[in-house]
Amino acid sequence: MAPIVPPFTAETASQKVKVAQDLWNTRDPSKVALAYTPDTIWRNRDTFLKGRDQVIDFLTKKWEKENGYRLRKDLFAFTDNKIAVQFFYEWYTDKADGTRQWYRTYGLEDWTYNSDGLMRKRQMSANDVAILDADRWFKDGVDVNSVTIGPEHL
View 1 (cartoon, rainbow, N blue to C red):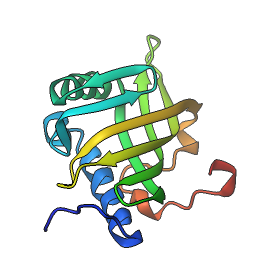
View 2 (cartoon, rainbow, N blue to C red):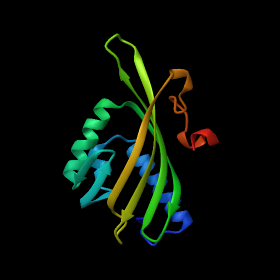
View 3 (spheres, one colour):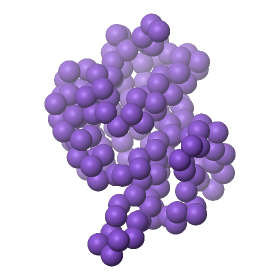
């Protein structure tokens, strides 16, 4: 498949979002980092990063903490070389008492791309909400794209 490069259309922006979703769901920091420029600039909540090495380190620590990570990204808006996404992901931590606490993270990202289709800037804001196992959307075997997300969550 040829790289998806700017200027984006509704179709190519949607494709770019789902490619990113699938890539992040691999939870492979080195593979994910290749989608970004070598000098990429990130803001992830309150963390500021520059360059692929920092991205790899950040994602390695993230996925050591966020067990069972399953992500869905949906196109929110786009321009020639920018894409905004709304995302949801679920993950858990094991508590000291042996129980498992699930969370759903809600957030928005804005992405800016170079002409070669690599992301040079990523800004992310998100909130984590504790949920019950019974309230999870992205259980094992569920296609994250098939889950209907109601307006109360959008």
